[in-house]
Image (cartoon, rainbow, N blue to C red; front, side, top):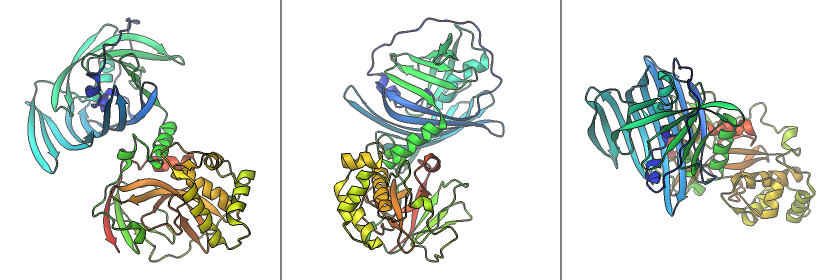
Length: 480
C-alpha cells in the first residue's frame, strides 16, 4: 500500500537493512493549484510477489477535500507474518491540513475503531477496542496532515529539486503525531517514458521510502529498501479483476477484507427453509437480481433486504434461457472433445435433465478439489482436478451445456459456518425454471444462504462485484 494507507509497514521496516539512495536530478516542477481528485488503485508487492492492494479516492467537500482509503495486505518476510486491513476517511482543508477522521483498522487480527478531530492543542481521538472506548489527546502545535498528504504537499508548495519539508503527520496505528521529513530528489523518467517527481521521506525507521509521483500529484510507485516492498499504480479494470478473482477464490490477502460478519450467526445453513438478510453498502446503481431463489427489495433507509426463497415469485420477461445459455463460449467451451467425453462418462444414456444436472454437480464436488488458486478454464480444471469456486462453476456449466442443459455462471455470497458471508461462484441451470446449482458443494438446489449479486463471469460482472467487496455489512432478519 502507498504510505498514505499502509501503517503496517512501520513494523516491517524495523526488520530491514538500510537501502541505497538515488542522486538528485532535475531542478523545477510546476506547482499544483489543488490535490488530484478521483480514484486510484495500487498493487502491493514484496520480493516480486503480490501481497495486497490499496484503493484511494479524493473528492471535494464543503470547505476542502475528503480522502477515502482502503486496502488489505498479508505477507511473510524474514519469518514474520503480517496482516493488515485498513479503511480510513479524512476530511482536510484546502491546504490538506487535517480537520477530522475516522478509521476501522485491523492489524494481525486485532480490530480498532477510531474517530477524531484536530484542535488547537492537537488531535482529540476516541479509540474503541473490544467494545471499550477511550479518549486521548495527541498533543501537537501547528498544522497536522494525514499520511495521504506526504506525496502531494510538496507539489502544492513548489517541488524544486533539493527542497525539504517537515510535516507533522497523524499516525493512527501508533496513535502519535510524528514529524516527517520529505525531500525532493528531482524529476526522473519511469518506464515507458513517464515524467515523474522523485521524493523521499523518513516515514519508516532505518530505511528509505522512495516515492515517484506524476506531475499531477498521483503516486506512481513507492519503494522500500531498493524495491523489496513495492507499491505500483494500476488501472481500475486490472485492479477490480484482481480483487474479484481473489475474493471468489477466498485467497489471502483479500479473504479477511472481503468477509462479512453477521449477527446472529446462521444455524445449519444447509437446512434453512426461510432466510432474510439486510445489507448496507450495496451500490445504488447495482441491479437487484430477482428469481425463484431470492427476492431483493431496496428499503427506504438504503438497505437491501434479500428474502430466500422468493415469497412472491412470478417469472419475469427474460426469465427463459437464451441461446447464449446453451452455446459454447471462450470461458465455457462445452464443445471441447474432453468436455463431451467426460459428460458421457458421467451420464451415460441418462436423459432426464434434473437427474443429469444432479449427477454432474455431484461429480464436480467429489472429483474437483476446492483450492484457493487463481481461476482456471474448464479444460485446465478438468485436467488438474482442482480449482476455486469459479473454476468449479465454469466446469459444471461446460458439462451441463454439453448435455443440452441451459446453464449460466453466477456469483455472490455464501455463508460459511463459523466465519460469515464470503464471495462465491456457482451456477444456475434451467430445470423447470432457473435452479441454483452449487458444484463446489454438490447441492441442487443450492442452500438458501446463497445470495446472487451478478450473473455471468465476464469483466463487467466482476467489476460490479469488486465494487461491493469490503463495503457490505449484514444483519440477519429472519431464519427458519
